[in-house]
Image 1 (cartoon, rainbow, N blue to C red):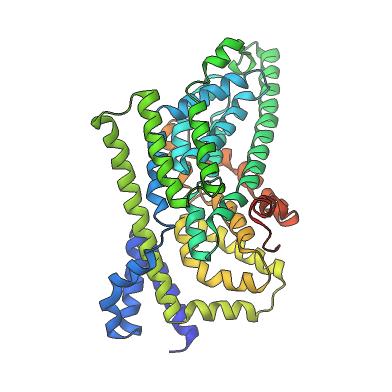
Image 2 (image 1 turned 90 degrees about the horizontal axis):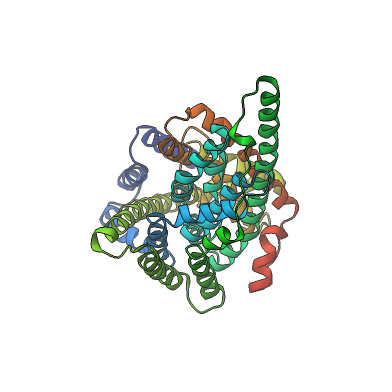
Length: 452
């Protein structure tokens, strides 16, 4: 069988399994095992478990369940609601401050928890009802939280970036640093849009009041005293200090990523025990249970994806695909655009974890040959995959929001998030024009390796 026929067959079978409705891990594992049985030596099947174990025997991957434990500890407590409340009080006087407060709260919570769904759930459960009560349109309120939640896979600690670092064989610390300024850029873009959209909705509310006398809650102004503002800090500051401490331990060279993850998890458990009284076995059990379920699911997907990539490599499918892409002799920017469009397309159906592990063997060699910095590209790819979390048909964050606010029509949520998808693509364009947004901080802290 020719390489073209083999590669086409591999792709078709993979799509058939994916669209059969089978869980992603089972689909990838089944395809890999099937092709091992028909196209690899018979002895290969005897080494499936060994191959999966060897592929997963990475000290970097050990940090994933520990970061999940840290995020679960924070997410299962009232830390998210308290963080949102503090932001709301401190930014109450700013026009559109409630929407901006939700964006900032999502960013800080994402940096502490490292999970997009957890961020949506923790901040959205308090933020969406409050915004709607104060006159924000349901779609706008849902869009802010759904888009803010995507920051969980860009701001460190990001599980998606951990997997990219493993797949691309890049420095995790450098990749974490590279995500900080682009994350800040997205926060600024989201906040500016929230302020502009608020002005529009406020103007419409004023026009309606003048026309019919119907007063909207959006026209009411809330004020908070300095005492009220400072009363909100004691429950929030410890978690911000936890975030700073973890970053100092990692980038100061005091601990490896895995050690940092373990330290963060232990400190998070200690904080929720001290601040919220979550220390009894019945209180801690849901945290451990959620960590175990999510870690098992994620690690199983990782293991099967790595086996899938191993089979592609053994059969030279990924190498042939990479050589074909290089042989097309596309200009470097056309190549980059084509790759990112492919990632967007895959985002319609697959979560970021699967996209990274399935495509890395094919797309990274041509990009590296074209002279792109793979750390820089990792940031771009992460932002593009963020859009997959808020656009249909998968749009994980959309369904998290729908679960939080079931009375908001799905169409309103989708229309509410689309402007944020545009802002993410704008951020990608800005990082392409000004690569220092992503590479400047890691180069300053860890030394320059080159530029895209």
